[in-house]
Length: 70
Image 1 (tube, rainbow, N blue to C red):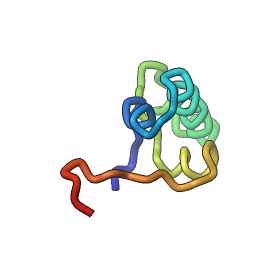
Image 2: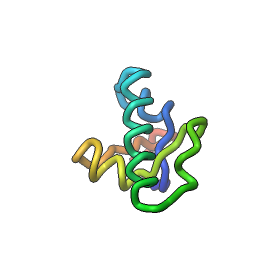
Image 3: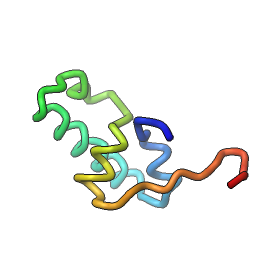
C-alpha cells in the first residue's frame, strides 16, 4: 500500500474533483499544523494516506489492484 494518495486516486474512488482537492488540502493543513512544513506546498497533489483515512474521511481507503488480481 502506498503511503500517499493523489488527487486522481481520490477521483477514481468516486470523489468529485473539487472534493478530492479539498480532501488533499485539509490533510496537508493537518500535517503543517503537526510541524511538517514540506506539506505546505499548494502545488503538491498528494497527501499522506494515514491522515486522509484517520482524520478527513474516518474510514480506511480501499486500494484496487492495478492488474485486476486479488
